[in-house]
Length: 114
Image (cartoon, rainbow, N blue to C red):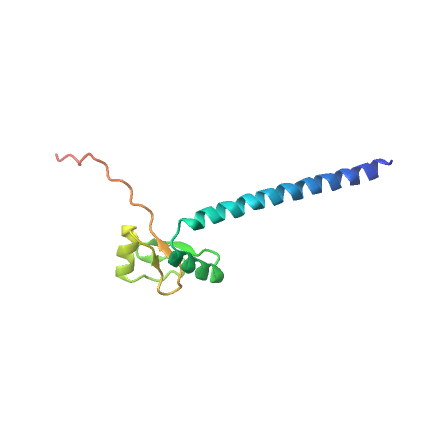
């Protein structure tokens, strides 16, 4: 058998091994996806799925009251609820889900007065 044929056979073996690995990895991701979706309320999943059909990023940050998806100001009530982190909120302009980064914990030391 020529070296070229041997090389082609090896290429075929490597490609098949890669396909099998990709398939196994794909199944792991599907399982992880299902596990993550199970703990989320159906209303939130529906909102996410609707936004995901339209946009690459269905969940975006709310920074200084501005949606980072459409860059329009959110209503002040939306900002307050999103900042509190007690529930999710949907941008009234683009329908993406909004979240706020958790505020940095304030240090327990109070500033000293001179």
